[in-house]
Length: 120
Image (cartoon, rainbow, N blue to C red; front, top):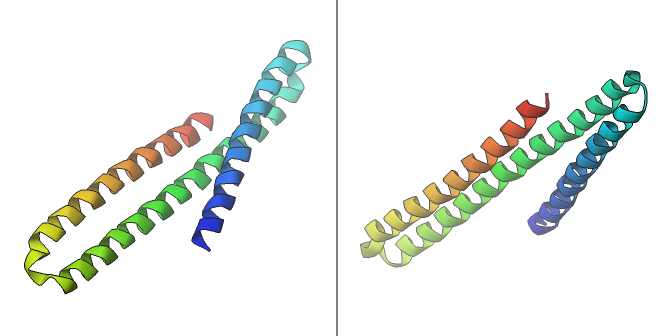
């Protein structure tokens, strides 16, 4: 179920990003050839799709990070239950893996927020 949801959200994100870039490129060529009164409508549509893509991307990032950290915690809990004497080493490995996941998630969120705020 999660895999299907992830695939659907990925396809929607890719389509929105590709469509937004196509609309902005089309608006740039049309604004050079036609009257400038139609440019704000095309730019606002491209901005809306860009913001939607950024928000959708940040939601996917947060969901993926939460899923990854929950799987790490689940595996660490099972490992400590099987072998309590190795709890310290398992905990250290769990914290390192969780911090790497959080670092990647923060980087992705920063990219999405930059995209959102540069388009508005």
